[in-house]
Image (tube, rainbow, N blue to C red; front, side):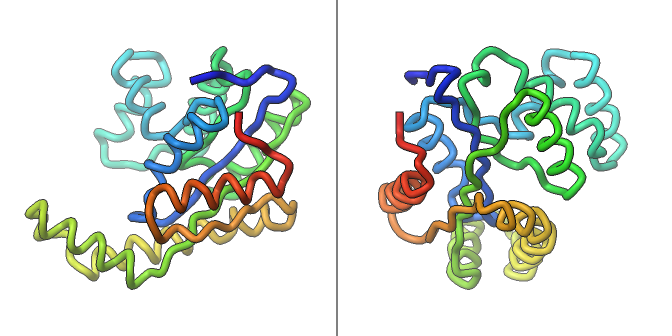
Length: 202
């Protein structure tokens, strides 16, 4: 991956419901724009594996069955964005999830004289995604992944993400992309949408 220079750094977010192909597109965007794809799940796992001070806190919380609080998630993300590879920009996946996290990230970047450049929102037809995930569950023998369970996850995503997206829409940063179609088609739509925002591929 060719990284960007600090001067033309680009800072992106990607959001989309379960089954929208977000992980696949995050990898492609990371390559096309020369920035690391940073997922909160990966950050948690890396810190737990390396037994960092923050990682040990996360491990204890997860093992007790609780959700990792915003304050700790914010600390972990701030630490990751302080790594050298993120100086040329980044693509955040899975963060921010709450209004409080949006405010924290905004303040963090403002202190560095930067800001989020665009938010990629993958939009998909719920019925089509439910059918896709249900088929995958059947193929993988996951009988507990019922249609009701899948629809519930879609509803939770929509409910949790709406306030976050409203903030970024008010800032004129959201790039809405049709997430249905081939992987290449969706990638092309993302690149076209970002180009309209003045963000070219690397």
